[in-house]
Image (tube, helix red, strand yellow):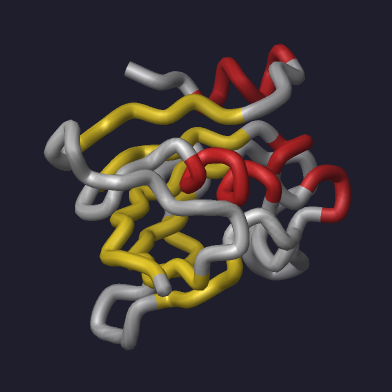
Length: 120
């Protein structure tokens, strides 16, 4: 499996993607600038959930424009329509030293389960 604690301790930079539900090989990957529609759940390495789109309308953002953390911009770009994956994101590709007060500690790796519903 993917060890987020290890990624945090070693200072490894980037993200690791593990496919949870594959999309068909012919399913397209999103182009830069696509308005993505996603479902996601974000947790800390401890398993504590800090955010989720469950029970809400799909989350939308424009891919590759810095509207989301770098781990999402780069990780989602590798996914196909219909794919569900786990992204383990290093602090450098997440919220870094600032974290998110009250939700994400400074220098914390992040674990997201993300699903690409589609894009326009």
